[in-house]
Amino acid sequence: LTGPKLGRPKSATFRTADVVGLDTFAHVVKTMTDTLGDDPWHALFQTPEWLNQLIAAGALGQKTKQGIYKKVGKDVLMLDPASGEYIAGGQKASDAVKALLKNPDAAAKIAALRASELPEAQFLWACLRDVWHYIAVQLAHIADNARDVDLAIRWGFGWEQGPFEMWQAAGWQAIAAAINADIAAGKTLS
Image: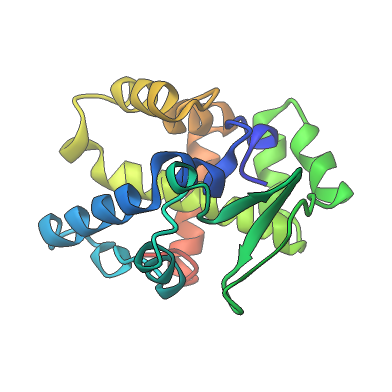
């Protein structure tokens, strides 16, 4: 869900973490925990227990050939955090959500994700909303302008568009209103 269909690399979220290194990822989270005490999202800067267990076991991702994913022969297995075991991966997005993501009109696509009752669509809306909310609050603290944030995310993470570019394409006012509505409804992370 968080790969090419959303304008992000094929590695999506968790494979990217494996490539970066789970220990490196945890170090970044710890640095955020230690240095960003005044951040309204501070309580969220923690690694889940399943990730701590992987790191403790030396499963650091691509550099150790085992992390969130593990290749066994030609099969790529993924970690089941509940059991701690590796299981067959490859689950695909539902056809309904794929259809929503194919819409070339960014405003219509985002509105459809937000309006959908499908859990996958709600997950994607929440991911986008929470990134937009965070960068709107933190922009003055992290960069001189929105363009610099967009370039850093595009170049650093391989996104087709930076978060502010995506927001602009989806409609500044409509997205701001949707975020504010979700804040009022208690749906946002902060």
